[in-house]
Length: 338
Image (cartoon, rainbow, N blue to C red; front, side, top):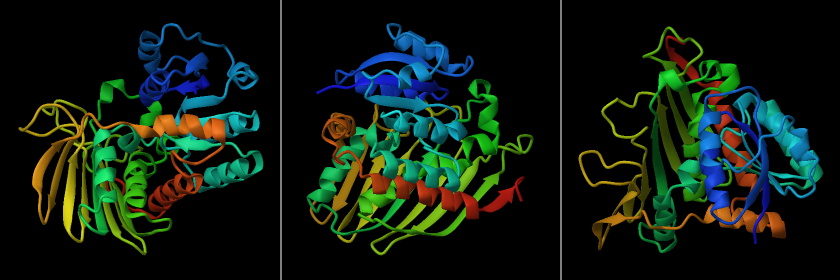
């Protein structure tokens, strides 16, 4: 069971992972479009030389053979493009953030209700990380009892020379909580089984880049639901000596133990990625989770064919986005932003 794809917007490198994971499952792509010549075009063409570029994205929307549009356009533009795609009868997988304002989210909700199409965000820090799959399995087995808190850390490397102008414009990218922290909000809701939550407090700051007033290089959120609590910290401070873009970590605290994920690097420790640590009443051990599967993509393909919600419910996708947007809107502004 495969899909025929089209790509609209390759402004963020996350489109590489979206395409690679879908094509690895047999999906084909009939064409791609992006506005202008962002730096990411070279990498896209190198990875997918067989996929033709089209001059107008409407060509992709009008193609009856295309089932799904993949999207990593400039964040502020994603909602409008997704709505056009859904009204053209296409399902959508977008990079995060799926939109940048609560008004855009309201329009997306209305469009999904109107068209019955799927609007799915590829939360890559969950869906493209094998250790998350293994942690989910351990939770289902009751390995740490009832989850009462998650602590999600999302540090990133600034990589200033590679960043486009929109990266430094808050209106264009939506703010650091809308953007990066949507990953951790998604994980909090999913891992705690929460369908609702409130933003207890949030803040954004610019401490290291005062010459770029549109950049937020630090953010944090405190969440609370009827099931659990969550703390989130995101930043653009990854030091140059780290061998990858960020030391992303997640701690899941349960009533009978805890799980820690070091998703991308084990500092001064083991090589590779997807390091999982489990501690409970009987086990205190390291688990190499790098061989765990990534079920989101297979499930999403099946959802498009069967009109189901096995990859991620639409309600969850909307709620994770809503909470990140709310946190951003009410955030205390610190440092050079104060």
